Image (cartoon, rainbow, N blue to C red; front, side, top):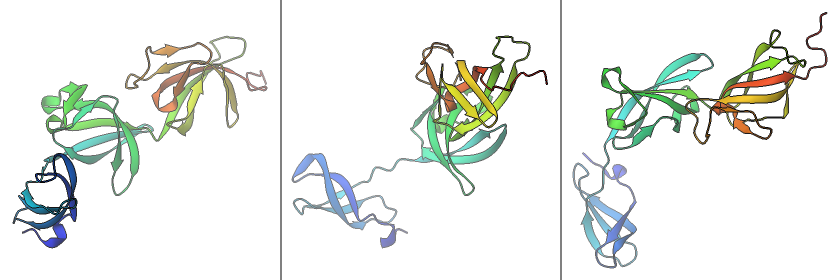
Length: 222
């Protein structure tokens, strides 16, 4: 049974008297049992009429979130006719976490994977957290030798920017960026690898950074 507490105070809807083509604000007076029909009054001209609210069905979808090498499962509720695409980002809110995640894969029935689908057809959204990310950096010695290269991981906000030619410092590590590789789920890039000075990438879009060591004491034989 629908009670007064369930009623919205106002709804936007066209008025057959003064605004048949554009929505105006209407005061909700009554609602039929089950909420199928509203009796409303136009705030512009006072005309009273009935409307049937547009009710979009929603679906709840499992979401697997990858975060710094680990993963957890949550769920999200959205309109069943909404289309979800690979690379899309949305806010995931649970009792334990509030974070922005990026879609990395969509799983339909039969474990089929697609790049885009309607919410009603999706069984699982695979994603990764992009508010804060871990970025792998391959650091080469200053002499250009690859034999003594090392790999480090830096932890930065997802919107942190890496730029070819810039010098970065993280703790005891200091390096000049030589190139970077973009993740397959990133959008807005026209190739996978960038190595021209001034080329830039967001941390959440970065698969790997390549750099030359700038630490004065690095690569010491002692």
